[in-house]
Amino acid sequence: MKVFKILVAVVALGCLASPKAASATDLTTVRLVTGLARPVFVTSPPGDTDRIFIIENRSGSVGRIRIFNLNTNTLNSTPFLTVSGIATGNEQGLLGLAFDPDYDSNGRFFVYYIQSGGSGTTRVATGTVSSNPDVANPTLTNILSLSQTFSNHNGGWIGFGPDGMLYVALGDGGASCDQFQAAQTLTNLFGSVLRLDVSAGTSYSIPSDNPFVGGPERDEIWHFGLRNPYRCSFDRLTGELYIGDVGQGAWEEIDIVPGDSKGGENYGWDCMEGFVSASASCGAPYGCSTSDPDLLDPVHVYPNTGFVTNCAVTGGSVYRGCAIPDLRGTYFFGDSCGAGSVWSFKYQGTVNPPITTWTNQLDAVVGNVDNVVAISEDANGELYICDLAGEVFKIVPDGAVDLPTPSDYDNDGDVDGFDTDAFKECMGGPGDSYTNCLCDVFDTDDTDGDVDLRDFADFQRKYTD
Image (cartoon, rainbow, N blue to C red; front, side, top):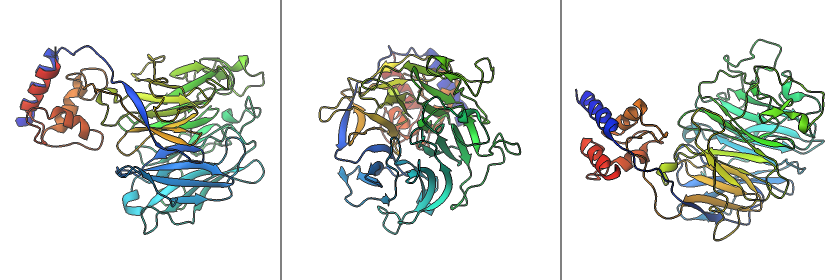
């Protein structure tokens, strides 16, 4: 009966609430570390809120993973992992890192790098942490290899989905205009996102529900028709996969895969670039037809304006942290071509969402945000920018922080039935990792660590016009 009364109260008060005028917290960045060798990605093991792991793409033919301690604000002098024999051409090097969802118990992680020799060989390999939590065992076990045809368009992102599978993003093989139509040829792995079961640890198997299992296509493929999906990310709340796909010469694009996708989506490269035909950038032959109704449009595009401004989208992450409550659910992404461009939008199921530009705000007082090669998240959902010039910045509030809109308890921009569920999760104690700080916001009346109806009423009274 208690739960029933709570739900009635939440729905009734939520319907009467009048949200205050929307505004957004101002943002800036603080530089955490400089002097790195081409930092290209930041991540953390699940639940590890004390450290971030930074990929150093390459120094000579060596790539490294470094640990930055968030409590002491220091960079460990000893790398977590050193990978030798790295290819040094163009977009190659050590590119991706993903921690097993059960890393706390099994100590397993996965890396993506390009090994030297010829045009390079993509390797997805697995390793384990040593008895020292800040140092990995030096030996890696290769689980996937792919010989590259050129030194660019190597993709490079790997990550675990909410289903526990490992996803791997591969470019179309390189050069320009996908001259072999590889992204539309499903008997190879180029230009696709793979979905692999790596529960065995030292090898992979094919999930039985992958879309092309049993056919002539490669069973590993989950999505295809991509040019160079260099940086991708899962929204830890919705399960949506955001893909930053680098364009040819006219348009850069962001694709979003629904959280309930069954796989098989075709994003249209090499016959489409953004929303239009690729003919403005590339001539025939093409691997697909622009009239194919199965081709999927991106959610957002922006024009390629040249190498000193904007020419290569790097993708980014959906903010699910605690420090900036009003921006939860907002996707931040950038461009690597020198202007330090950072934008954001909140996806609500439609194309061409309103875009916010953060470029000037996020240029730090110390250091310059220039070549944005990644915007990625730590275990808390806070965001970091990797600048290829050697710097890592954290996105932080600049001054006062706006609270969420009253009654929008899941912070999705709408006051609806889902807000009832979100508030209910906070009753009697904290929820799981992404709701802890939302619950803290609601504990306003007595700040005793519990959220109850007195807090609910107080929150409504304080933050409703």
